[in-house]
Image (tube, rainbow, N blue to C red):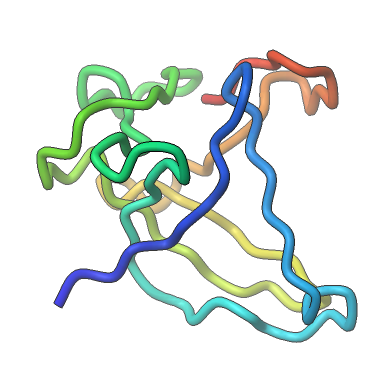
Length: 108
């Protein structure tokens, strides 16, 4: 059975995750491989553009196809922090360009 991680993908491709238990720093999401889908449209998922493994490749919302570029490895790091890496290349992490906190910042 495929696991789906529901993250809120909202205006300007910003990612927001909120969970009450996370305030205590405890693990709330099991380590594993997930498809990250939009809370607004179940068929739209986080997708690595053109299945690229190059540094700086954009991610986008795209129709779910089940391809490897739509799968993400989630790993708990402790203290409420997680890493999200590409299923295609575990050395490629989901990243916000220049660690920006501005609305509309590029996610790659």
